[in-house]
Length: 516
Image (cartoon, rainbow, N blue to C red; front, side, top):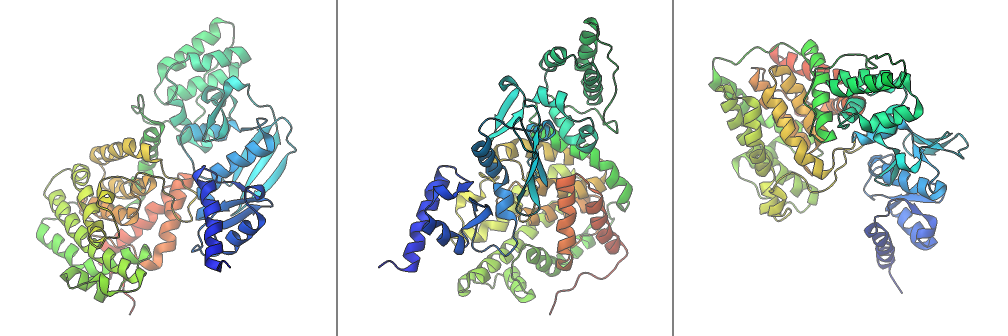
């Protein structure tokens, strides 16, 4: 007779077969009742709604949202395809955001269908589907992306609500930048006789510096007899950026940087300037190591003590002595943090010596990362190939509705990110956006938070600000401010959060404590 462990293994094998086929939205019919109940009881399956499930992790705490946010888009695609076949399409507004590669999970996903009943389908963690009866485009104007039926980009720009230009300006500008010439949009404007929309789109293209497209839309529509009055639908003018021949991910990063930098400059402390005594600055960086390591590692969930951190610094450590897996990983993380800290300190010395801060971290950040995880390779918990470069798979941020760029996009985005750091003239912007945009991209499978804080402190040095520690007791506020910036494109909360910590350091206030 099979043991409970053997029975669970059989059920996991059935789940694995489904996942190998790419199935995320699992229907009751996909698994036998026995397997389904066993997997649910053991935390490997979560019910989304009656008859529908998604895979989960048994170590997730009650109320954990990560598995659902990671499954959201694939679940919606599979569910809608099953219940509506081809009679559905996401709204033009949502279509624009997905064309612009913004995969942030929305609180409510608006779905159009000719046979809709105007119902709301409740989904986990305060998300939902709103099913509205409305026309959907002809097949020529529908594009399939990750299993989702979208308005094609030209059709979406014509059909979107005017308010979306103000609600999601970064998404719309990034989408507009994907339009290479006017004919793609003009054909549909002319077919529908959309004179008002033509004026709005002409103004929108001119807003992002695409004057040729704007002129062609207006002239062509007027030539055939339409009274087109151009108007800018955005609430603010943006600096004209070079967005041609770039991926929408790169466009989004550049637009976000440009849109956010003004608020950062207005609300962050003025930089004191590079100190005259560089040696004393570096001594201070060395002196706060134990406190910084405790708080930074604790924010990431490691169980560390000042004693463990000191042993890791001195080399008097042996993670194999720790039989508990979590303690072993914490010991490896502490040693890696010490090694990375020394590499960061060398980079800061070059920045204080006058080198361009963006260029220094572009050159050195890979060294920081390798040092951070080298002890894990030595201990056999990581493969040497794990230190080779940026991530080679998807990554999801715990409890966040923000979905980082896919692995292919990371290769395009990271050079653009370092270009922005290198070109930025304001130290405060390098500090705030250097940290935020890095964790927004999430280029590594692990260690992004620690790397982001190292980047932040390197950029702080470029303005003469003191090394700043984010306290463990402020973790919730820290993560909430990053979520506000990632999901709602509002950098104000994060700017004020970091600015308050920096102001305290400039005023000479005491460093965060380490609990006894």
